Length: 212
Length: 212
Image (cartoon, rainbow over all chains, first blue to last red; front, side):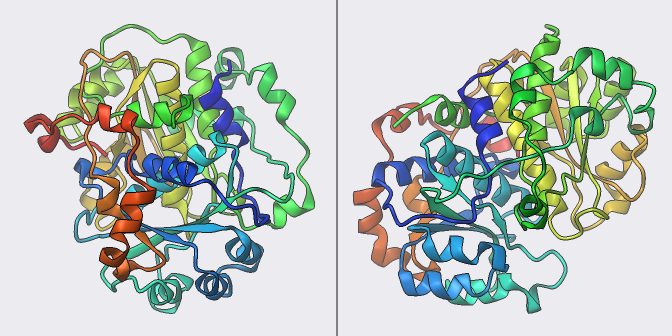
């Protein structure tokens, strides 16, 4: 079973190299629109998307993120920073920022653009985190949180993508009955042939990469 | 600018009423596949998707979630519970579970199915939360966390969906320069006409609804 949405979901991956091709404003707008239509807790939409084009700012940001993503942040013509305000949604602000980021990544994929999904939110120790340094660079107020950076542009690299099998991650009716239901899973939910085709061997680079 | 992916992103919404129409296995499989291809921190894929069809179990779950979603959990032919293991990803497990949930919600939308995005993860007090009760019902081990429930089925209700304007949530290069750049935003990123068309007035029900 395949359609353009399922295809975008399967084909999206976090790129680490972008070329300098500029992006049409219409496409940038469509990507931001996708973020706007994301779900959020009680529809509070507690987010702010910062569109970073300034070269000097991107360079400073690139020195803060994990090395695997440094060049992506530096080279991509645009980096979108997804901020959320926990005062507006104290319970699910992380999910709110994440759904917006994922929507934008998928929208970009559908427009033949690439993204990197760089999760920078610091769950345990914001004070000493990359998130804090990035908030300083982008003048993000203390009470807001930064969930992700999403470099956006044209990929300079063709990358592979791998995932566990469905049988490794799906269960029926409760957590612990997995082995009992494995045969049911195999019968009902076997990955279709088009998915099997795009499975490729895990490369060493994939294993080393800090993609989210 | 419109394509099937952007359309699914805009049209998806959290439904609160489902009818009893069963879902074809092929569609359930495609939805689960969409979760499987979600991004996660360093590609650890720390998730488990529990496909709940058992009527008694769904009834117990429905009594635990917020009342606005009770009937959705009870009536939908399938409820997918998205679990993650923080031992595999201590830093971004919430984002990992959220990207998988959002992928599945969009996949469902593309297959003319509806979902409810029910965020049940308890950020502050797991001990006294709906999450803990749901974990008990689904036999989810203590060390795992439950991010969301995603009732999946055919909608029994046509619902509206509203969002803030892009100009309310987008800024350029840094957080505090928003007003300076507002004109740039309006010139470059004005919502296209097709988006304006689907903007509908906020209903009281929308405001009251606990959708994520």
